[in-house]
Image (cartoon, rainbow, N blue to C red; front, side):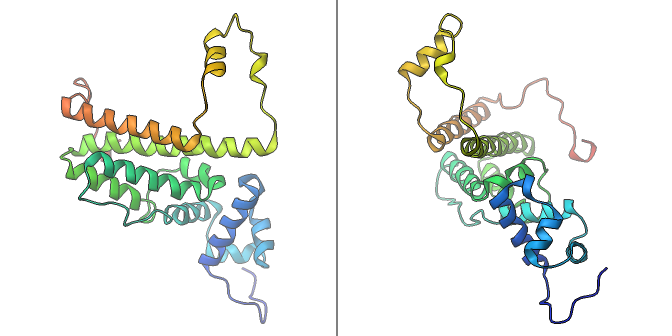
Length: 230
């Protein structure tokens, strides 16, 4: 470990995470490395490792910071189950889209830390209030959470691509091979990512609640495995 230089201001883990997330916001993950982060902070890379043991640990802290953007007070227990789940899903998406270039870090990790599990706790509370069993709640949680992360990741990727390269023109598609696609393009209209997200999540939540009411959410032949053995 390098000795601290005289008159150099002290460095905290919080400052490192803030600078790392700012760097990702500006350059994406491809532009993020410990050398660039150290230069941004005006320190040697070894100084960063004094506060954060590894790059993986830093990425986990960045996910903590992203997930801490979720409004912990978003849930209103006086609303119906569907409204509560939709509100939580939209709040989750807002937190993710505040840092779209950090989304691959969220998508690549199982949420484990208290900061990362805050949103999970909200959704599980809603599901348990509605009478879901633990197995049913896990199925619904995974479906909602993975849909939010997946759609947000696609949105972020499209935003990134739009800034870098032009899209292939639709008019190049041969009509004899793609008649249905051509019809959709000529007659349809794009509603935008926000509206498509709202439609998709509402359909998903409605389907989950309907399947649970009908007793078909968990397949009859499913064999749940305890988490300790999974």
